[in-house]
Image (tube, rainbow, N blue to C red; front, top):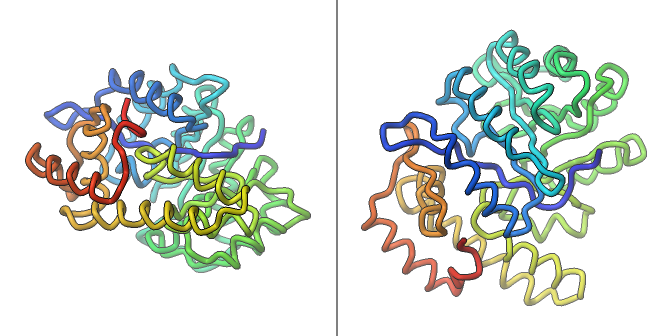
Length: 302
């Protein structure tokens, strides 16, 4: 199974009191499908996984599994600093999702590809029926390891290794991974601000948080790139970057981006500490700034 096209790194919907709101997932799923998003990467960085309990993450996995469909594949992030709990979540996900992924332990950081392989192998074998993706995000995990070497070793030791969620601005490294093992692996690009830049180096699948908000814009960038309209594609990419900068200027990207979903008609609720939840007044300001960028809300809202 080849997971491709736009995959939204989803938020974890919450009630006003901060508890998980699984009833919001049905409408959330429909919103993504309407915007031609092909999958949901759940329980990841965007979903505040580090602030969720294992029980809450399982709750989210179960809820999303009830809304799987041929046009929306689910990748469940099961990584944890505790290997046994990561394995437990992988086993729980084995009959519920289309693939699993795991970030490297991010407190006691891994210092070798061999250790990373050992960690991933144990998690992958806990759901041997599912494709396994390593979640490469060195800025947060601290695991600045050679991904081409990981794939070469992983091909021998992890039977269900499907590829990498490559969240780094190293386009050379991304390209090398794409070519590794004669193109055997599915390398999903995870750096939204470089979406356009990833196209010439062969990206076919993307995982990111702004695909929640701006999927039609990214589809248009692809269309313009394929049509040779590079100037227009660059202009749209610049708008996506301005959108990210706009959110970063409102108390932190994760919290502001989650709150912004309300403007688009998807109520995801508050963020977990330390991320901020924006007030309605803040959202009014953001809404005006969104219009000022030159983005039309009706293109993106439900």
